Length: 156
Image 1 (tube, rainbow, N blue to C red):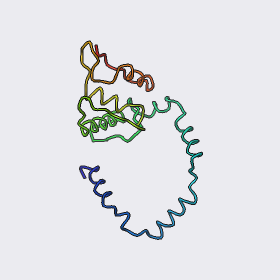
Image 2 (tube, one colour):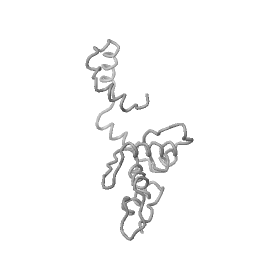
Image 3 (cartoon, helix red, strand yellow):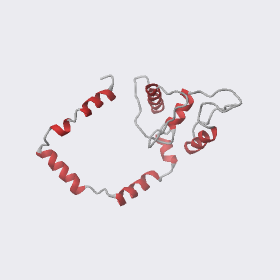
Image 4 (cartoon, rainbow, N blue to C red):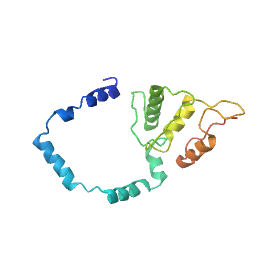
C-alpha cells in the first residue's frame, strides 16, 4: 500500500472492532490484562522518572542529531539512522505543506528536533538586518544546548 495513513484511516473508520463479537480467547486476554496489570498512577510516575531522568548523554548515543525519539523513514535511499530520521522529517514537512506564518506544536517526539528541522529547511534564514522566518536564534540555540547539536543560522 502506497499510503498507509489513508489505509489505516479507512480501516479504523469502519469500526469493525465494535461489529465483531469477541472470542473467548480475547475475553481471557482482557481479563488477564485487567487483573495482572501493575500500572497505576504511582508506578507510572516512578517508571517515568527512571526512564526520563537518565541524562541526555544516553539519548545522544542512540538517537540521531535531531534527537528524534520516534520512528524513522527507511525509504531505500537511507543508509543510517540519521538519514532515515531526516527522510522522515522531510516527508512530514512536504505532507504538511507548511507556509510562512504557520505554527508547529511538537509534543513528545524528542527535543524539538522536528520544529528546528522545519524552521531551517522549510523557511531558510534570510540575510537581512531583521529576524528571519526561522525560530528565534535564542530559542534555537537553547534547544541546541539541550541536544548538543546544530546551532541557529545567522539572520544578519
